[in-house]
Image (cartoon, rainbow, N blue to C red; front, side, top):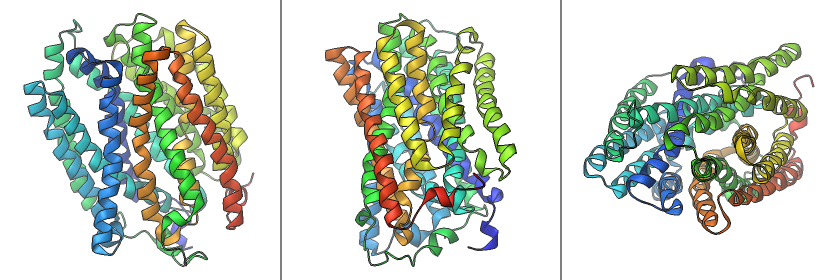
Length: 478
């Protein structure tokens, strides 16, 4: 491995993570749009989840278009146009989607709103296919999953402030439930977002990001080069199901939370935003914790940072909500729940398979507590699912693309395709809730975590047979 890859390339990594921020901002803002659209367009809980479906299905459609174009070109699209150009193109597509919010808001069209979100998601699909393996490649392979975790932490800075900004833009100081005004006021934040997409596309085009990252190219002549498709690797195929269910439980837990808090706890729509923000901030808290190893090899520094990082992220959440003039009193107790996360992170010792297993089991426990209790205890339990989902994406992604060599970008595209789980599982939980109640519907999340625990156990054996052992790779002095 070349010497420049012995350390994380921060000059290239920092421009890349801006894109991760956008994904988070839009995805979490959808949770605010769901109750607003539900009221404005008089929808059922199942119908309101079409927001999630439109956004997340677009990832699958985007991946299919990517594969179709690659087949027609008889060459992988990203390998042909380059990683940097792929990112810029994805941002331009997303910007076109935000333009639809203007006529959609003016005409009060739910279908046009969904179409706008769908096109934004199409652009995100291409961006994700490029950016995830690129984040792993910009430095030493042994800290690849930590770099992806760090990028995820920036993503969750977007998810933390997204609901608050969009909620302020929609409700503003007039939280009087004037839904006509709510729909009208959706257009401005999304047009500003579209402008930001274009600016970042231009910046990335002129950045020093590589068109063809070396670490991905280096592994092209791997021992399994006789395999003609990424789908010939069982770690990827099982990983595709894992990504589907992981994004499913992460999104459905949050997108069904407003309905639970409204119907069971009597919250007003406008008061739910800080709790949605806390859920996504929980992912940021977990990811900042999990990213510690990307910064330093020094073990004692890592131990200190493992305690500092999560509380620093929690501090960002409190600061953002204080700025938005929300009452912080209900949130201080959450600082104790973060200790569970720190203990789990230490127990995983940087091994993505072990981390996936521990965090999945904790996710199951959190959901069962949420289903068995009432009041604020149940809200904190459901919210803490964000802590235990936090590092699962980089764990699954790293495990699934390990050993794929020249099939890495194709494998990445297959994984991005499975983000549709966010829409389908959200809709499924919304539909199930109509028969067994919103609180009991969280059993869907328990089933998702159960498969993730199985994948964590199974994939270790698969990779060891291919000569990949993360305990050795990620030893780092453990």
